[in-house]
Image 1: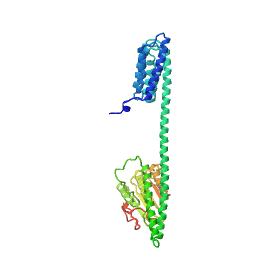
Image 2 (image 1 turned 60 degrees about the vertical axis):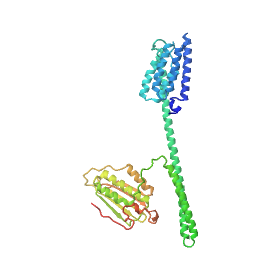
Image 3 (image 1 turned 30 degrees about the horizontal axis):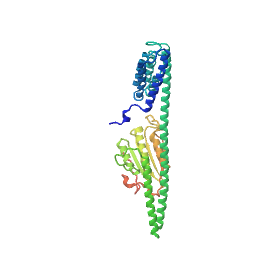
Image 4 (image 1 turned 45 degrees about the vertical axis):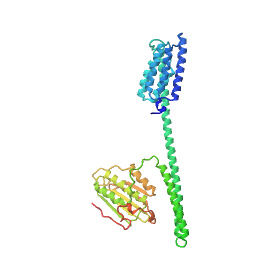
Length: 408
């Protein structure tokens, strides 16, 4: 059983508008008929009030409301001698159509309003002179007002949505700053406590134990506060149907190279320098750069050979992906392909690499084909931030240098 509010099709404001329109039109009819030496009859007054009461449904059914208003108003005009006029009731009905309906519907309603309102005004049954002219002008004025109000409402709604989005973005930036402050504070405290525990472990076990207790409490507090902020950031997201898979890293490059070969592209993969574990975010960036570069190569270079070279240096890691597809080199019979500029893939790669303070080069090769090269800082003196070996399909990378011969 629905509530009383659900059963009602009109609001208190609609009732006030209907009563006001009825009062204004009744007053106008009364004065008009007095000038014609014919008092307002009960029948005409009934149809005037009924026409105004039809406005109660103007929000849900504006077109039907306007039709009822015009029909009842025409009957009222025909039952009482009145001079040309445009009542408040048809003005409100037409305005509701202008605000709520499509232009085609509004045009049909406007074309029907002026002649129907003019029925019985200034003569019986229809006077095509002053009544039609005056009512046509009034119709155009009401339509113009409704269209202006409709435009204003749309702009107001768009501004409201824009302000809401801006407020959400500002709140997310504030939460990000808070998250940064939490991480910076607690991680600094944990680092100091860990250093103190290590320094006092041999000659002062009690001080080391106290530092470890503080370290544990700080870590627990940091995790709790970060979970609260992340829950706010993820509010409204749909729950994940399955647990997320481990993020890939540099140790997973062999897999995407194999997929590239299976796709028909002859891909060579080499590793240079002493391989070592990389920070998880750096390893993920290396993986995504190679993945995107090989995807672009398959799109633009067809089955032309490609090379992937991963190089470990003392303070950085570089990855280079080259293909030998159509290009600008001499002797190429295939037309040069357009340079891959402005694509979202390259933009995403640049953002990932720049996030770690690295550089990315992506340009056609002079000898033909395309080259993507990324250089990422990766100091070797922080093994505690390295990728987890169990996340890699090839854990032999961190243990010994390996150079893989090209597979054709």
